Length: 79
Image (cartoon, rainbow, N blue to C red; front, side, top):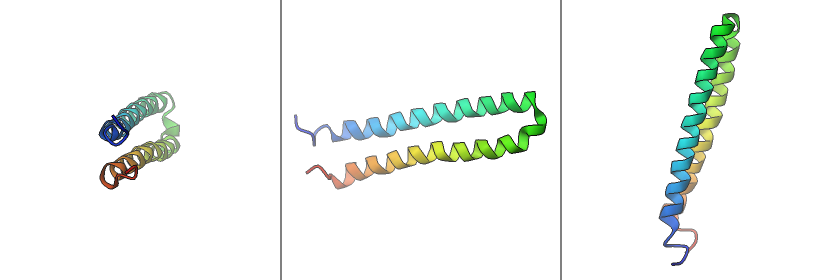
């Protein structure tokens, strides 16, 4: 077995684990936001801006990992 045969396995792990991590992060962030806004409703707008910024960063990391994985799968840079 050489490295090119393990490429689909590596790509699927890169995309799958990135998706799992991103989903868990967004879920935890959303639950903590709801908890914080229930405790202090007057801070809801400022917290909402920060939550949307962090959700964008989390999703951005997943999209970058997906792009790199698909680049490895289609271009085969290790040939």
